[in-house]
Each structure stands twice: as structure tokens, then as C-alpha cells.
Amino acid sequence: MDFTFTEEQQAAVEAAKAVFAGVAPDGVPSPALTPGAVAEDFDRPLWATLAGSDLLGLGLAEEYGGAGLDTIALCLVLREAARVLARVPLLEHCATAMAVQAHGGPGLASALLPGAARGTLVLTVAAHGRTGHDPAELAVTARREGSDWILDGVQTAVPWAHTCDWIAVPAHAGDGEAVLALLPRTTGGLTLAAQYSTSGEKLAELTLDGVRAPAAHVIDAPGAWERLHQVLATGTCALALGLGERVLAMTSGYTSKREQFGFPVATFQAVAVQAADRYIDLRAMEVTLWQAAWRLDAATGAAGGPLPASGDVAVAKIWASEGVRRVVQTAQHLHGGFGADTDYPLHRYHAWAKQLELQLGPAAAHEEALGDLLAAHPLG
Image 1 (cartoon, one colour):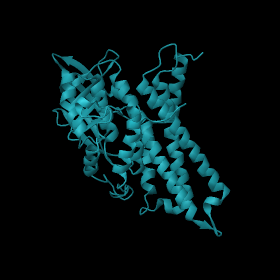
Image 2 (cartoon, one colour):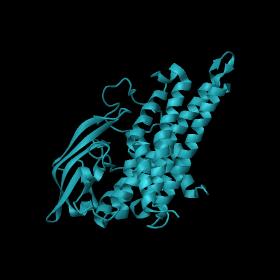
Image 3 (cartoon, one colour):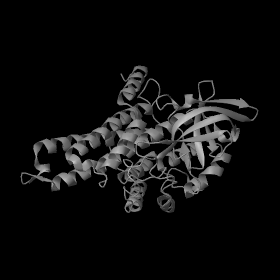
Image 4 (cartoon, one colour):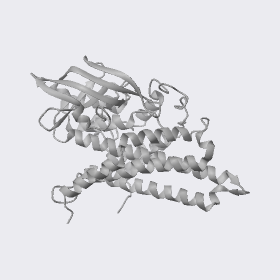
């Protein structure tokens, strides 16, 4: 396998490193000490810097002010964002913009994408359904009424919904194919109730009561929602990888300085073996992430042949959901009581890791989905 990145992808990484270099992971109150949200809004100054560095339009065409890159480039930037716990809707915004470009009509694209690339218009997406366990598209019904669509239902844990401009909402139209409605946050019949993530971010329970969306704002192209959902999942794996790599680096630094019996604890075999196991987890998370991102961009796989890209996404989710948990648990163990000190940032990474694990879902569910794909697409 060749995991060499293109010059354009490497340039995106360098730009991201420069942007995130000055971001402190403890720039907001600790989620362990805050009963509600750690902040009412995302990091707007950082968002403006990302926009100024042309990182918000990575996957958009030049005609919309974008860089014309791909899912791999987005994942590379997300990896850097997670290292510093960047509080911005980078994944949801970019993934939704890419979906509008690929599947939306020209009117919708012209209305949303130039502003999305500049950062003056913020997008998010409802991807967790009513309970967080059921398919998101089944949580909302969509029916035609004249030239409009009428939407009813509830979506939970919608990130950044209180401060974004537009929300992408998947829905089922009763014919087996999901549609994707793009709704302004202030749309009549759309209400938001506050929820809070494990990491202390403000989420929203989104209720749709007879919401009317013009047909131009509803994407009914086959596979549009499935593709967006896969990009969101793969991007979440990239966040888990970046976070895990930063946590392992913190652990390495701490155990190299912390001494017991006159020796750094990093020299003890039990410590070294645990750290090595977590390094292996991270390398597995990395290789499965790039495989999934590459398959999404290559759009390969057909019935009766290799597994579709959803199989690679499932494998990446299996490793990411379990791997990021193991990394932070080992880090806490090797840090001792210092890992729980709210003046030290490790507890923040632990909370973010738990939130990412919840977003990805249990590995057993992805293993079952992978088994179904293997049964439906014999590899022999």
C-alpha cells in the first residue's frame, strides 16, 4: 500500500498545523467543573483564521472559492484539529458543503457554497437520529405537498445547531430512499432544545413540526445521505486518531520525566508494554482510516466484487471506537492521579474521546454490519 499524500494534501496539513499551533486545549472551562456548556458558541476567532487560510473550502471547487481537494485532505486537517481539541464545526461544515456540491441543485450550491468557503455561513448536520442508535433518516418523515416538502420528526444531539446558519436533516420519504433537507436554523416549525455532550459542548434536540422546505432545498439524489453519513463517520475516525496520537505523546512525555525508585517509569517493562500496545492501536486506526477515506474518494466496489466503501468505513469505525478508548484509559492509568487533575488537560482529552466513541457507536454493531456486507458480497 502507498500512503504517500499529494503535494496539495501535504500543503493542507502544513496550513492546518500553522493555524492550530496557537490553540490551547484548555481555552474554555473544564467540562468536569461545568454543569452546562463550556461555552455558548464555538471558537469564532479560530473559525475566522481557518477561513483566512482557505481550510473551510477544502473539498469545494474553485468556482465556489474552494481548493478542490478530497476526503483524505479533510481527514488530514481534522487529525490536526483534534490534537488541540479545536472547538469548531469543521467536520460537519465541510462534509455538508461537499454533499451539497456533489448532489444539490445549482441554485442551492450557489446560495450556500461561496459563503461556506469564506466561513460567513456555517453548516451542520443532524446525523444521530432520535435516540443516537437508530438510523438518522428514520427519525424524520418527509412528504410532498405541491412544490414543497413537509418534514416532521425529532433528531437528537445535533452539534453546533444553536449557532450555525443551516442544518442538513436526513429524512425518509416512505419509498425506501432517504432525502436530505437543508434548512435555515430560523425556519418556522423548527425548534431547538439544549443538550450537552460528554465533552461539555452544547448540542441540540431538533424538533420538526410541519416544517416546510422548498424542493430546491431538498436533495433527493440516490445515495446522497449515505455518502454524507460515511464522510462524517470517516472524519470522526480522523478526529479519534489525532486525539489519540496527542494523548500518547503526552503520556510518553510524562512517563519519561516521572521517576520511581530513581528511574523514569517509562523504563519499566509494564509501562513500556502498555504504551507499545496503544501505539499499535493508533497505527491500526491510521491505516484503516486512510483505507476508508481513499475508498470514499475512489468510489470503487460493486455487487459481486470487492466490498463497497461502507465495508472499509465499518472497519475504520471498529478500530477507532475501541482504539481511542483504550488509548485514553491507558494514559489515565500511566499518569496516575495526575491524569484526573483538572489543571492538566488530559481529563479534557478523556472527555472528548468518550464523546467520539459515543458518536462512532459500539464496535460490535459495526462488526455485525461488516458481517452482513461480507455475506452479501462474497470475496471469492
